[in-house]
Length: 238
Image 1: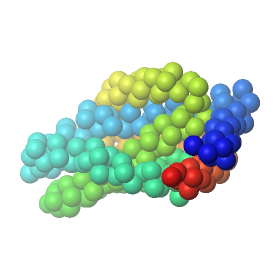
Image 2: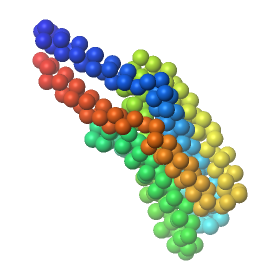
Image 3: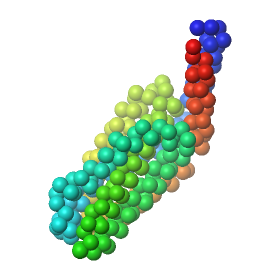
């Protein structure tokens, strides 16, 4: 490697470290709070529907089989698998903070929409099923976009401690998976199908506000800086 390439390599390494150190202690605490709460919310949405959606469909749309219900619910993960390669492009173009807010906006819209589907008449069960599957698919896209972006933020902001924080993020997702089904079941018993989704939409909205207030705006700028670094590395490669 030439001396110029070595110097550029040192500059790139130094710049990446500077990205990770531009937050004070309070800023890091706010950032980690947003990331962890986001992971809990995403985990909650994944399994919460399993505790009441099949019951509602069986009672109001008996023509929909259990297999069809399973397909509808699993479309959430299908979106995650299909769009994982796209998330990297979205994050690099929109920035990390904007990607998180965009993902949560999708979750608010789709979660509210799933509640509104309860007003579809009994004899239009096909419309209910296809719309629910599509909306659930969109929900999976938004959910996995948020989770992917949060992992990207940890890798950028906490490179020296990323293993620790990634482990905590996985624990936060696990907490959401644990809390989701009983929470969904309790709310469903108290308020019914539609209000269960409205309640989750309110929780998501609260997290959107938290992210808007606490996430640093430079998360978007860092995506652009990282692109410049990657281009520099590629340009200097033999």
